[in-house]
Length: 420
Image 1 (spheres, rainbow, N blue to C red):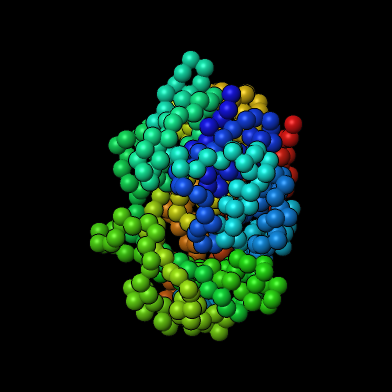
Image 2 (cartoon, helix red, strand yellow; image 1 turned 135 degrees about the horizontal axis):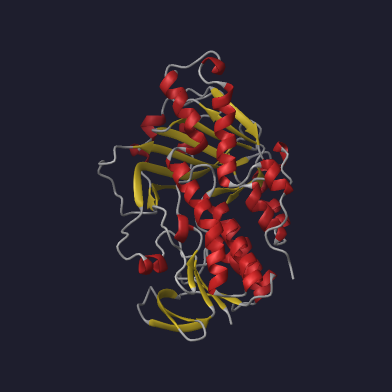
């Protein structure tokens, strides 16, 4: 029988391609009337790019994305704290790609429709409930815009890839409530500007309570000697600070954050100018969800943000959803579309992603920036006088092990999914 996938985002579409790769039928049910290339920039780390490459998508990614060459941390004064090569430049067998989220989603969507057929993704179908049957599962849908029933579908499994506001998770955990806000607000935008540093650098400047992130996301712009820069301006408030927490994609107001970055004019990047030149700016509260002790209930399981929504620290959210999809496909290949496959998938992925959620709450590898702010708020002459080599390199190495992209381990391990 068909595997039913609720949610046509990055994780759900990767799962559809992975199930097709092993010869298992599936259909994707998406709440919106049409899937649009929304969002801003994201990073796909080498362990995720490997999986997309093994689905035959590396050429499409390389045609639009920037292969990130370095990750660099700076103080609020623009002083370099630490940097490291990334992707192929760091010795991985696969690149790290900086890409527009919507472009990545469209690459996946086009591949699903080409390989699985034009009817493989059904839009305007918002999941409202499900029933287990003697042979599988029956899912029920409505048109979210009109409120009208949209019918039901039967399958062997139901996979909830329906995001941080997952209807399935809400049904399984009705008392959980809204996502957990950590007091930080992200203002995000995309700006056309001149390249900075290597032209393929991802930078983070500041500290835990005020930070600026920037990286280029367009190969087309780079080929013309320009840069399409994805940027994030972040400020952290007290936990009891009154904010518009109910809004998830609201247009940002420059007056609420730009003055706090007015002096961040570095010799390698003019932060206020980058912010002011953006065509659009959006605000997002930084939220996640507490890890739960169970994803799988009979023939239903959680995947991606529905399972483990995490802070955007360490460039790991989308990458972990991709890994979820690949491990689940492997277990379906081993056990068939059964409850046993779901339990085996959860046994591997739930502990791994729970560790990352908690590591991100501890500021992940970005903790080195906070240490510099605490120890040298007025700047430094030599970073060695502020941080030990173990603090500089150990923090990043430890996070890579937790997140599953240690270079040697990744390069050496066999594929997660083997084709038919």
